[in-house]
Image (cartoon, rainbow, N blue to C red; front, top):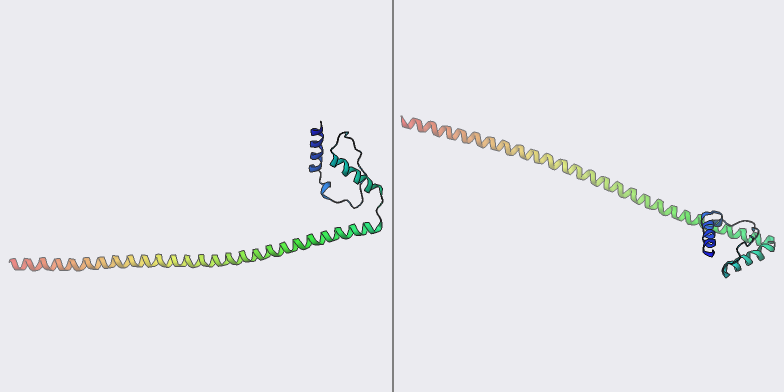
Amino acid sequence: MQVVVKSVLALCLFSSTAWAVEPATPAAPAANTTPAQPNATAATSTNAATAAAKPLTAEQIAKAKQQQDAKVKAMIQDQASRLKQLEHANLEALSQNQELQLKNDNLTVQVQVLQSERSAQMFLYGAMTIAVGVILGFLIASYVHTKRRRQW
């Protein structure tokens, strides 16, 4: 039975978003409906009951308000510093991206130059092969022609 009560209380605590917000005015003490509670829970409910029984003074309310304002300011400053860090990291990433794009463009141009040089080189090889073939053709033809004249 105690396990069921604890699990129900834990489920209510985790599913509720009201536990994350500090109330501006103290809430009325909850009626204790479970007969057997652990000592820690009983001590907390008695502290809440004594705190709720005493009305807060204007000084305590002002002090609580100042503490809450200080927490909000600290959170805002923390978020502002995180925002600055993110902006700085974003600028670094953008500059690195720009640099990498320039390197990529340079490498693309180099690849195109190498490809055009390779095609020009192949063209020259082809032209040299044709020239050697023509020269060999003339030499062989002239040799055959002079050999026929000698036979006559």
